Image (cartoon, rainbow, N blue to C red):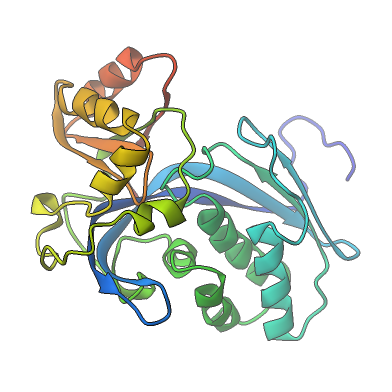
Length: 279
């Protein structure tokens, strides 16, 4: 890859944002025979996230940088590589791509992570390899329950295991300021679902009046989640504070950007935060 002059872009390099995913509400309705759970959720996406770039190359390779790159595999256990391999096989094309991921979001944090990166990989490689986008839709569910939503990266209602999607239009979502806060603790999805109380607390109607049924289990594992939620809820201008996914990242919605920015400036220094906007 040759160096470019300032302001110039290599047309052979394509890139995609892997937007941070939020579950504005998450109701767990029961356990499924396949070991997963029946869910009802509203997926929303931020304008910011990780960034994945790609260019044609011999074979498949991945490099990673960014503030959360440490310890991440670049091999076949990385979901970006798995997504690329699955897409190439489905489309019947060679898996030839040089990929680079800038990891700006914390891992194991309830905001998409590897699923968002996999969704970006499917979108990006569909363009790079000039293949039918239906191949990406076909392989996404096998990569993870959140991958179909992250492939879409549009506000949607998720049912089933979270992968049965319906586009969702709500004027209280798109364009609204949001602050994401993580207490700096990685939290794997499996133990949180294992700690779910097993009780169906009812269906999801208005997401603003909903809940996250995984919050109690996540807080038992990472008590700092409670501190984050209490802090977010106390910030001037907060209209809603809730945990996303299986945690530990929480979010607050604000009516105006100035209130969000003031909260971001006041965020405790040992907590990760991202001031952004919903798509």
